[in-house]
Every structure is written in structure tokens, then in C-alpha cells.
Image 1 (cartoon, one colour):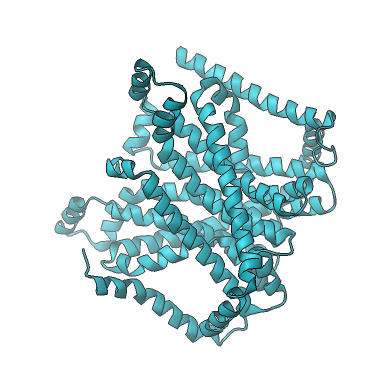
Image 2 (cartoon, rainbow over the protein chains, first blue to last red):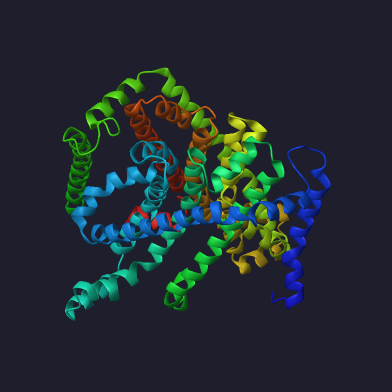
Length: 255
Length: 262
């Protein structure tokens, strides 16, 4: 099934080209769907301007800040919880509850506690992203290889060395799975927190376009959000491959 | 015997954990660490929850949310299974659609919020649009994995025995892919619930999310907390129901069988 280069490119582009053509064909019929050319023009005019610095970059910055904080918090709390049976049994129902709460409902709550500025938005992202990371870390640490744990004890590997050489690498595949879930939740929360109460940011701007019936601009915003999601997921896959190189190399991932 | 003991003491620890959380939420506002206007004591939240559970409004809202969730999930699941099987079986279609799927899948469905608002306004349609988009990809990807994992020898055997295309799908592809399909359904059910509540919260479609939004803007803080507890409990119920379904549907599968035997 190995196709040569040009054929591969052709196959990858055929379907999207068809879809754009179909879009073009139906775009005239309704007010809500401008033509691809109009959206492309709106995209260039809207986002390749000062908005990129004023709205897009701050949004992305908040997302990354919240995501990083949630990752640190999730792993930092998850490791001790995973290592201690009692702690795990005590906290399990509480954690299951917090995981089951749909993260967006926390937005109105956090607005009460933290106002509507940047700290609120970062806090919202942290509050949603931390649970998948935390619970997956707990699972990963809990399922560490028992023989390896005994070996570590025999050789007197303990403390920081044990954490760095045994616990974290052993739990890494699970932790990365949690981080992947957290990323898509983070994007959702970034957009929602800005739609709620804000005067800048990607979510705010897109809703503003919609309220002013700037349809082409609104579509360009949807497109930008899609691109952001795509870029972040590609980036994540890169990082994951790099962090878990040993894991994929060993073939364990396919089992 | 020891297993049973372990189970009992785990229950005890779990109860202690929940009790601890409630005590903490009771103590923090009472000691004045956080303003009681923003975080009412646990007893007040639970009292509000009890009152709310007695009103029809809560149950109506809950019903609306679950209706949007169920219809959206069913639509997405049906479409994704049919498309996934077709794409997975017809030769060449997988390679042709791959780039499109990989491009559309990571688009966050909240990006569709403005479009849904324009097209449907605060109604069930908005909820369905977000739910279907979010849940569809979860199932589709798993179906594609599942169909790709069908044993090629079994497939060739079925073909050389002259099974028709339909019975190959029915008796070989579907059972082989079923564990993947159920995984997709489980992921999709959770995501669909999140998006159903999101649509209500942001667009104002009737349901739990809209109730939370109303309670928040009218300053009924303990109601906000009570409704969030309800949302969490529903989330737990949704997860548990899908897990139960998964077990029943896959009761024949070795992975589930060995789990029960152990």
C-alpha cells in the first residue's frame, strides 16, 4: 500500500478540493454561507492584522498557561495519590465526581470567585484540564510494574531518583493520554470563558461578528479556531512521540 | 474473605473522603476564609439541592438536557458507524478521506457556537448541532480503527466461502469492530454530555446549563452550586450507564469474560 509521493499528495488533496468545490456551488443559495473566496478574504483582512496580537495571542497564551498549570498540578497531585493506597481509596469518589462535572458549568462559578479578567480565564482552563491529567496519572502510577518496583527497592533506589527513573517514566504513557484529553477540553474552555464575559480574545471576537451579522468574518473565525485545534493536536503528537520514543520503540503501544 | 474486607474498607475510606470534602466546604465559609456570598456552606448547598429536587423545574430541565444528549448521541453514533464501516471496507476510500478526517476532527465543536446561534437560536437544534459534531468524530475514529483491525485471514476466508458483502459486515466486521465501537460510544457519551450542557450555558437552549446561567445572573449562588452538583451526578450516571452497556454488549468478548472470572 506504499504509494509514491505525487500520488499520495493527490489523494490527500482530492477530497478537500471536492469539498471546497461543493461549498462554492451551494454558497450563493443562502445568506449564512458566503463563498470560499469571501471567507478567505475576510480571513486575511481580519486575522492578519493587529487582531492577531490583540486577540489571538492572548487567548493562546491563556490556554498554554492554564494547560501547563493543570499539567503540573495534575501530575504533582496524581503521583502521591497513586502511590498511596489509602489516599487513593479516600479521594476516589471525590475525584470521580469532579471528573464527571462538565467543565463548562464551572465558568459561571469561577466568574463569581475570580471576576472576569485573565486570572478567571486561566483558572477556568486549569479547573477543567486538571482532572483528566490527575486521574490518568493516578491510574498510571497505580499500574506500575510490580517487579520493577521490587527491583528498585532491592537496589535502594528511592526518593527523587525513584521518582525520576521509575515512577514518572513508567506512568508516562498514561499521563500523556490524560494530557491529550486535557488539551481538547482546554480549547473548549478557552473559547467559552471568552464568550461569557470578555472584551477581547478569540471567543469574544467570533461571537461579536455573529451578533453583528458579519457572516464571512464569523466563518473566518471558525476556520481559525479549527486551524488552532489542528496545529495544537499536531504539536501534541510531536511532543508525545518525543517523550514516549522508548515506549513506541518497544512495540508496547501496539499491544 | 480478604477481598471482601478490602472492598468494605475502601468504601469506608471513600465515605471519609466525601465527608471530608463536605466538612471543608462547610468550614471554609463559616471561618470567613472565603466570602459566604461566593461559597455558601455545604449544609446550605445541600438544603438548596433538596428544595430544588422537589420542584418540577429541575426535572424538566434535566429532561431537556438528557433529551438533547440522547438524540444527539444517537444521530452521531448512527452516522459514524455507517460512514466508518463504508470508509473502512471500500478499498481506497480510507486513503482518500484520511486528510479530511484528520483536518475536521480536531476542530473544537465550540467553534460552531456562533453558527448554531444564527441557525437555530436558543433551541434544541443548537444543542444537537454541537453534540452531534463533537460525538461523531469520537465514534468514527474508533470504528475506523475497529474495521482496520479485522483479521485479514478471516476476511479472506469469509470471501472464499462466498459470504455476501452484507453478511461479511454482519458476521465478521461488526463483531470484530464492536469493542472499538463501544470505546467510541463511551468517549462520545461523555463528550456529548459536556457539549449538551455547554450549548445550554452559552446559547441558552433550555436545560440544566440554562438554569445554571439564570441562577448565576440572578445571584442565587447556592442554586448555582446545587445545580452543579446535579450536573456532576448526571455525569456519573451517564458514565456508569455506558459502562454497563459496554459490559452487556461485550459479555462474549475475552477481555470482559476474564475480568468477570478474576
